[in-house]
Length: 168
Image (cartoon, rainbow, N blue to C red):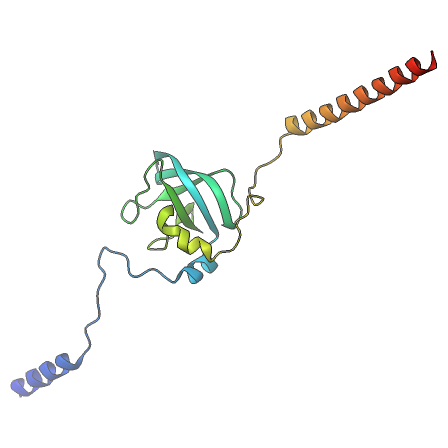
């Protein structure tokens, strides 16, 4: 009886397909179109700094182009120590998801160095710099109003001066 069970087990194991296992490595990333659709933010940026925080390594990017979502000129993401290490000064195409506590590059995703990401970005359409969420400071608004006021005062002064000159 034991031999019969062992023989059946051996025959069964011979016909069971062997699936690849990806221990401590990323499986194949999703297609770019899928990852783009599921990401909260997709941008091209240069790593401008890294710092260790309680939550992990925080990476600061200077953002150059945004294809999806809204970003300021500087974006901070948490780096996953195991999967992808960002190098300061290098440009990346970054796909971002909002995690429970912070933004992170998609784990096992298509985030990559920009020179390899150009092909992906070509399928996204035109990037938008208008999607930067930078607040306009009150000082900037005041400065613009002052310039318009100064230009108006100069124009009125010129008109008055010219009229007086012509009436003499």
